[in-house]
Length: 161
Image (cartoon, rainbow, N blue to C red; front, side, top):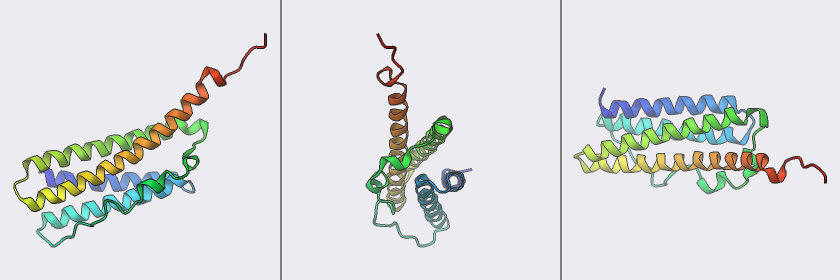
């Protein structure tokens, strides 16, 4: 399997992963984020498939169809119930890992690319995946900070003296 086929498969796997997570988080704000990411991964796959088949394709001008800043406008939307926090944060960490794998693959492909057109496409995909990485990194940090706050001795039970 060549790098291009690997990249197409990686984008497809990412789309399926995000759709599955959206389904598991139905009714919560994070569902919208997962659906947007799944849609972006689908578009990335289609770009790569068209490039692979030497068909016409257009790289969107916008960095991302998601407004990154608006995702975190209300941090409370990302609160999770205590009993599911560990499981949820693990999902977000897995998403971080998947995005990091995509970034590394696209960077390697760019280093080996000989055509300028291919480098432009890979630059676009690297930026997209870096944006996705930042989204999940922020979610993990929000959850980690909330967990630290709850576990902090300052907020724990105190004996009266």
